[in-house]
Image (cartoon, rainbow, N blue to C red; front, side, top):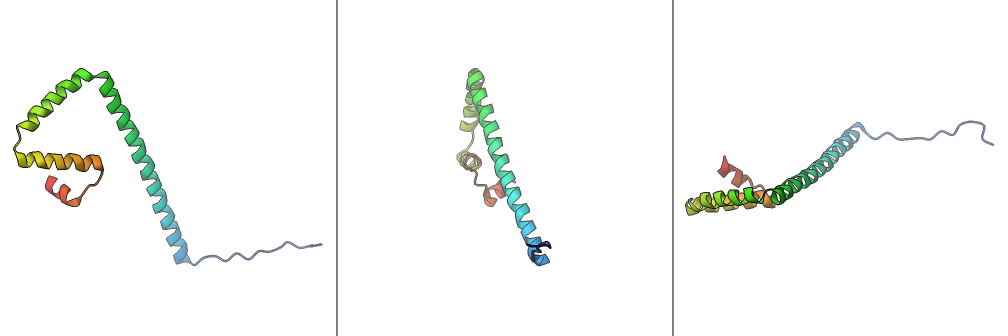
Length: 103
């Protein structure tokens, strides 16, 4: 029989490695949080757009005619810029050069 307590030897990691691990865990948690937030905002936007599509078809027709009139009155270079800007927003690739042009 063992009369005394068994002692386990746990080695503590060096301080630098411990700080790096904590920093990595924080970054990893922030990445997961951003992923969850982006997914939830996409769901909210989909719900809003779906609701506005089904509930307000007349308003969408008016908005569509206004956008077409505005878009057709622009010159070709500005039309191309708007097309690139809109596709940049929908695809999700936000190039630094595109933002420099906007600013």
